Every structure is written in structure tokens, then in C-alpha cells.
Image (cartoon, rainbow, N blue to C red):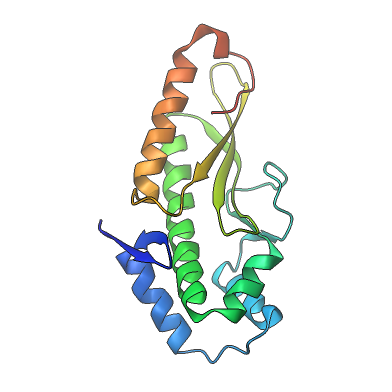
Length: 177
């Protein structure tokens, strides 16, 4: 999957084109409230918050977006496209991540993505292992200015989790990768 650099962030081509269409088809009022409303519609059915602390929500689909992101989007058309494309990538990333965690036999307790005031993002997960029933917490920063796709980043993260799972000291304890 090739990426496109939009306003300094690498996003998937599919999400970029959808974001452009979403922005072109919608006459956004240039205020943060209307931008927030349109973004929250993209995440219908998800836990939605402007509190950007990890591990606070329950369920698999959660997103936290700092209010400054909405203000920046309202004031900059390129930022609007960039962030909408990143939000669309987030939707795909979270489903893929939950599927990967389940595939290795763990239970996903909660999962979410955070977009901070500066537009940077991170993804967090709470999972339970079947053998020890221990909870595992992980938090990974998602660099917006590097080309790796969300899937590549998740693969790296899953490898880190496998290494920690194999370490005897990690068994039965909560840890952060």
C-alpha cells in the first residue's frame, strides 16, 4: 500500500482520496464545532472523547481528539484533508489491530487512538492473555511524518509484544511496549 504525504503526514492513498471527497462534498462552516460534528460522524458507533489520556475507555473502538485539532482543521483546508485521511486510516488500523490480537489468542478488553493537540497520534490497547489471564497494556506512538503505514507500525508493535510475552519476567504482569 503506497502512501501520500499530505501536509507533512503520511496517509494511505485510499484514505486520502476519501478525505478529499468528504471535504469537497461538504461545505464546512469554518468553526471548530461544525468540524468536530462532521468528524464525530465519521466515528459513529465509537467511543468519542476530547480527553487525550490512554486507557480510559472500554470496548474496541475508541477515539480521543484534542479540541485544538478541530480548530486547526477549521482554519486550514490542507489540515482538514490530512486529518480526515488519518482518521480514516485509524478506523482501518483499529480493526486490523483487534483482529491480530484475537488471532494470537488474547482477548481485547479495550483499544483506542489518541490525536494530541499537535496532531500527533498514539494507539493504546488493553488485552488479556488466556493462559495467565494477566492484563497487558500497550501504547505506541504513531509518527505522522514517517512513511510506514499503520499496518507496518502495528506489525512492529506486535513483534515487540511477542518478544515481551516470551520473556519470563513479563508473564503475569502488566506491561507497556
